[in-house]
Length: 355
Ligand code: PLP
Ligand code: COI
Image 1 (cartoon, protein in one colour):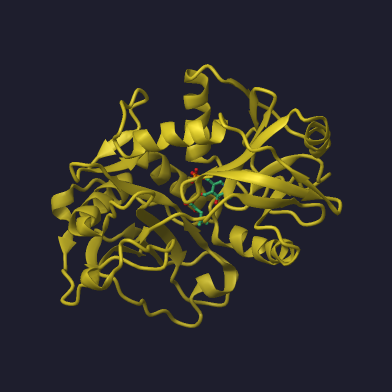
Image 2: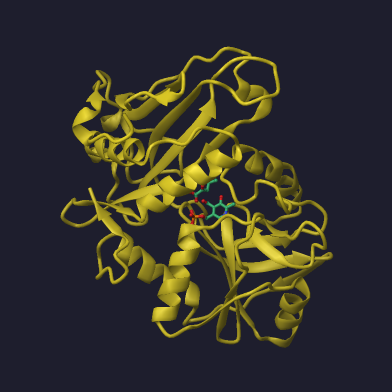
């Protein structure tokens, strides 16, 4: 069966809800987990009908291929509650499609669209009280697929697990972000897996990011792997630069994640009459613009980070500070996108999906 409806999904409710012990006024990012999760298992060539079960540990054989060969992909989404307690997702089909694009690249079987979409809706209904209403928070949703099948042979597993777990979450960054423009390490390469949300892409970032943190920065701006002359992404965010009044972002490629926030911001900015330019941005151009004052803003975009303004960057042992603007594109675009997400405004693009 490849098409299911919500009624096909069974629910096993927890006997030990953690809801009352959760402080919704002090939510960290991604550390407190809701009562339930969705699970489906891939065996003998097909996915089981997903089930909603209590949030719980999973048991794996030590030879499960996820541990050895890193076959794992994930997504990041959010559920938002409006002032009537209605629940919304933002462009959820895009996440479903991207999960399968990532899976294909990692030789993981794709999950049928209705398993993802109907499963997610059911899970959100069961755990609707976990969707926070405190300002700036949302229910962070983490769909993921990994190889549970066994064996040391370096080849794709024959069994996989798909889970959606959720976490009521506050802001990803507590304030403005400082970044180091990367001069040595690469996040991704031509022909590689940079465009996929593969777990290993993040593991590969941790060491160079820690080196940047040790020097006092919060994040790394990744540059192209061949020359390190062009900026591409910022940690788990796409990157935008404003030079004079033009908003610029790098074109997506097989090295860059096709961010849903990025492409939404591009559309919103165009509609607002902002001059938008999708093109390569050289580090040289940014440094020169910082020196002559035409570099007005830089910000990262992503589901977890929403829009995170960058206050300054480091490059070749020099630090550059960005100006504080009263009319920043970052704050204007953040208001516009979150107003759509939380149903505080019209949705001219039809991006909101009511649950
Ligand atoms: N780039 C990377 C590497 C990411 O991990 C993310 C986070 O999901 C993004 C960009 C932003 O993508 P999206 O806006 O779809 O969340
Ligand atoms: C997201 O923005 O949803 C992400 O996946 C970022 C995550 C790595 C924290």
